[in-house]
Length: 83
Image (cartoon, rainbow, N blue to C red; front, top):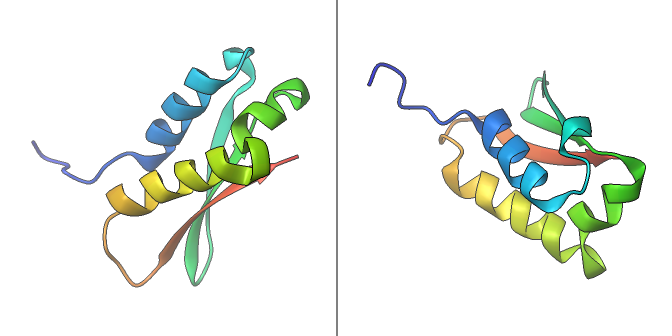
């Protein structure tokens, strides 16, 4: 196993596709900033509520999973859900 680092974009995409009705419209893009790696998640407008969840619980759970598997580094790892 040459690369043991998890592919976080693929993980986020897998989790989001499992939640939505229009999986073909799920997009995940990595934006590297000075202090953080930001993964921008974009879904169909009709699926936005499914990804965010009641009171933001689903979004919080998604972010928690990503934080737990993200490699430890000086940069923070963030997940933003684009509207």
